[in-house]
Image (cartoon, rainbow, N blue to C red; front, side, top):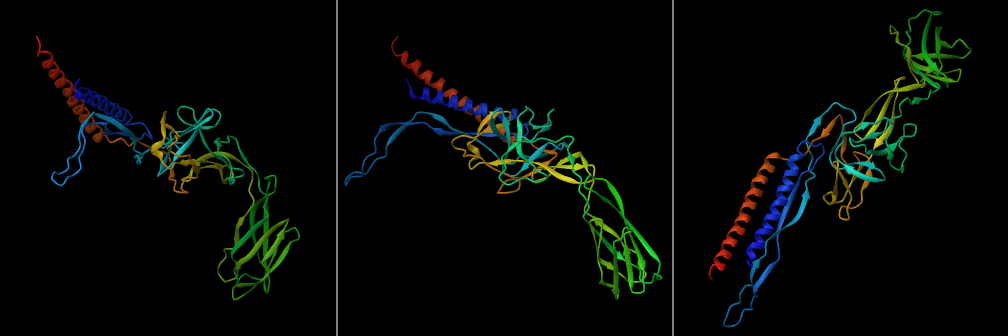
Length: 386
């Protein structure tokens, strides 16, 4: 039989594979996080017709004569170039800007994906569209502990931020130096106890001949003295376990701006809303105005991402040639950052894919002509004897 028949068959098979890969790329042109693939061809074994010869004194050497036996698919490579960002406005839609994969758990196996179309299920767990559980770290009192293992990310619906008792407060501003002796200024601030109960801390400033006397009405007092408007005496008052810092108060004329600047207590608060930051942190906002880190999404990188195996659902699994995943935080150790409210679109280039369709089609047709021509030659051979 003619070798060209089998070369043509190998060409048909290889270009059919190219058509299959190109068709899959086009079909996934709108799949979030999809990475296009490309086929690489290589020639098959060649049959040696004549060996090469060494150069002689009287004769030159000759090259080997070989007849190729067709083509085969050398590999199907995945292009992990960054896809375009598409804003969705959904806070749980995440996009990785840079290298890395989201880590998800399906059953007992971990998978990796670039598709960040996540949402919270009925159990308040962050999941993919097909129910795989997004992996990360859960914060303990707002802190991600070093060395903590990854696990499911959950939104603590109804979580309460405990109250914090006020232990320190500060007064800043200016006490007017032209105030008549005996006149008083009163300043208030709301403070909290360990149960979150609130009370008013009131300080009364009384003008004296040398400065100001400060009293809280419960027996705590302090005397402030000034030289050229700068505090030279006093500056601290302890009222009911709360240390009030008065060291930044000044005593210039014509300015009445003295007021409480801050206090470190807060009431208890309940979770009102959440947002995701560029390092993957799930940050909760509480009714007392405070924010706290609730969890953090984990990212993974591979030495050779091209070695990952596609498992469907826009997910990958490690192979022997991808290396094991390195787990880390977005923005650290060469990993990309996370953009909330956006999705990474497919990186399929339609113009390139349609060109590949034409190339594959013409390659298929040309190899079909090889088979047709070889058949005609065989037909002529069989017609030699009639």
